[in-house]
Length: 330
Ligand SMILES: NC(=O)c1ccc[n+]([C@@H]2O[C@H](COP(=O)([O-])OP(=O)(O)OC[C@H]3O[C@@H](n4cnc5c(N)ncnc54)[C@H](O)[C@@H]3O)[C@@H](O)[C@H]2O)c1
Ligand SMILES: O=c1ccn([C@@H]2O[C@H](COP(=O)(O)OP(=O)(O)O[C@H]3O[C@H](CO)[C@H](O)[C@H](O)[C@H]3O)[C@@H](O)[C@H]2O)c(=O)[nH]1
Image (cartoon, rainbow, N blue to C red):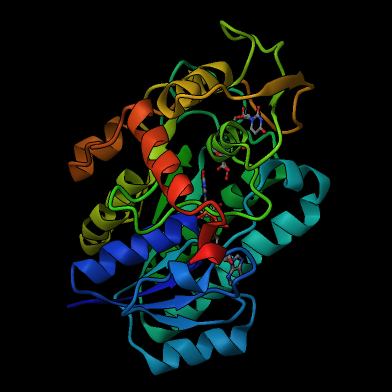
């Protein structure tokens, strides 16, 4: 049995990861200040420490109280649009919290670290699929903050031997197929849950951000990856870290869907139209982000098991129908 520290484990991707770890019999300690997360999203059996990752004293106390085999660092500011209004806050907070945590891990002798990184560090695509070696040129402060965090971890590897895996998620979506967990942000900004809420009448009509991109239907194209497949990538990279090396992997399906295609799929799966209007572009949005996942497949054996957009939407829809008030509704 292993023991893991999971920051942001009460949030969307973090809570799905905690559940998977607990289910396979691992011990989990979560640090989350619940600014976005939910107590009810933390799987029974995991220990929740309500604290800010920026609080060095509390982080040190956690490392003193438990010995960890690895750290999963999900806690971050993560909204592209917000980062364009508050770039300095995003860069400061995401970089310094990653380094605070990495430093505490090194001091405690825990030399395995998994970072939630992002496709947003690529910026405008220089090829059809983004490879790990594609040009890094973020067009949002959020992407820049994660790129800096990755670079900080490189130095922790070189100098302190902290092995890290930076997982560059494309667009996390969907919900636990067992119906136990889902996506519940306040405010919600992600396309699929907003389209579902619009269809259900739980939220306003969707606004499509930009219809004049250089894409076949003029709307942005993204690679939506099921949250359960993302979790699987986290578990697999532990083996890479165990081999004593650091790595960076893209985590996406390798298929791109436009905003209009997502709206159509949500309407189809839900059996209801998605009310929407068109609006201007959202600052910080590249037109196309689609992953090459070849490296992750090759080096870890990862395969997406829920890769169809209809399954991604269906699991998100089922959770929302069962939890129209999110975790507040129990
Ligand atoms: N959701 C996506 O599509 C996506 C894509 C790429 C990368 N990511 C990255 O994955 C990670 C998780 O994303 P998510 O969608 O699950 O986000 P989320 O907001 O649902 O979860 C983040 C959790 O971290 C907690 N948190 C934030 N700052 C904290 C702090 N300083 N101290 C303690 N707790 C803190 C929040 O309360 C929340 O529970 C983030 O690092 C994000 O940048 C997400
Ligand atoms: O109301 C909305 C919301 C979104 N969109 C569009 O839908 C697409 C997806 O937007 P999301 O907000 O769902 O996701 P992002 O692509 O902005 O960002 C997500 O994926 C990124 C990497 O691709 C980051 O890592 C980020 O953390 C994560 O939220 C974008 O083209 C966006 O412009 C709309 O048209 N209307």
